[in-house]
Image: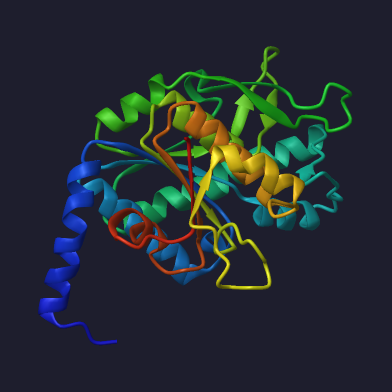
Length: 287
């Protein structure tokens, strides 16, 4: 599609108020889903993040990596088991998770940001005691699946102060120096609260929260925290959307300005959400 010079100028003018409002602000981006596995989408996400940095925002990337972990476990003949959407993580699986997330996936994202003209530093929750974790399941059935106990944002602050984009693998460190595998959505929400971020953006493989999943026109553009409980009871918030909405609720009630669940399959979805009047996806807000 051809865009004239005048149309490009109008687009920039529309973005100007948002650039002004978010100059110097922190935006936590949970990067996952198809946007991580599709090469073209991946490149556009990297471009979005670098552009945000160059216009004065401070993007903080938290990533998942489930498909890559599945592939490596399969190659090594280790069976994957899930309970309530969480990967059962024994000691052998934890080694693979840490290797794939902290090594392969994290550094590929860093390289992608550099290839798009930005500067990034890849870290895991173990670096600088960034994420202190505890077992998510007291029974021990889930193994080394963890939850965030607390976040020490000092290292992230240092990375930002030196002009780099932090890229964070969702691995935490327990009291006995044991690594824990933590859901990336939960880590993104906890980091957004600890960093007093103005936005938390979750990239997903759905358009957002739908009143009726079969109706593409039933997107709920704005979801209030007070509506969440009823929507869960009615089954509108169900399945994989439950933990994502819960993360958004924890973030906004913890002081994050706004949270967004957006479709990472849409090219430049982050820019569409941050820099346009219409936005995309579902925005979760406090009262």
